[in-house]
Image 1 (spheres, rainbow, N blue to C red):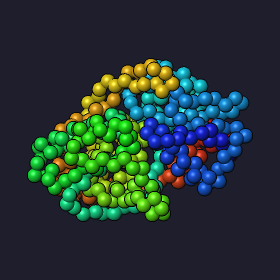
Image 2: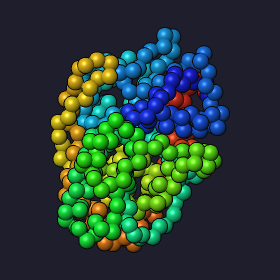
Image 3: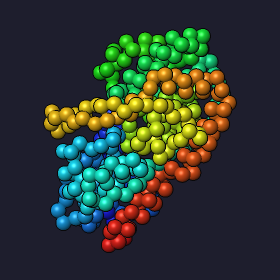
Length: 339
């Protein structure tokens, strides 16, 4: 198969998920013999819709995702320009299909089981709650801060024996967050993925941070895919999450801890202009987050049993080589001439 992978979003923050997803998927495609050739007839662009640009005389595939309930009307034009849309989850297919006549197919992402190996951990003191992700409201950092505040108020005896680590990538907002979580540890370092890079940089790996924790907090306001949750579950970390968007496809109450939420209106900013768009997003209930934290804390062996099942599901059903197989299947179906 010959395709041209147009470009990859670079950087940390809003582009980090796209960057990792594209890099891992392309690596697996190359392993399976796919040739990335600028002259190929099929052009694939993995990007937010508003950055999508057509290549003349090619079949243009937009691989994208969205976190909320409905795309802004101004974005629909970008979907309609594509010959094929690929999204990572079922909710995204529903949202994209509802506003565009362009065919939509699902290609899930994966998790690197070698980088994030499973380990059945023990209940330690202090009991460590962990968050990994960018600092913004969509990622649930405000919800975590308020939940941690309530945790300290409701369970002061447990708060003495527990701690919160927030591994983030937005240092400009650190003072604001520290006011909300004065007794939490906020780590702004960009951690390496491999032990080799960790030794070279004298830093712990991201996998080591997951391994150190007892419970993962992921009460987001919507995910296109939700890679940190997949990584945490792959490592055997009991996980609390918002069941909306990408996380609905990768997690369920059988092996993780969904929180209750209510839909709230939020405003998106178009990075190409000053225009704002109104959408609805799932806002996790603070008391529900704390209830799940308490359930995991008081019955940790049951939580570890769930986490073991989660790790099995991640490592057997959500691998990057499987994602590559699905991508090849989609392209072969629509563009057999690329094979």
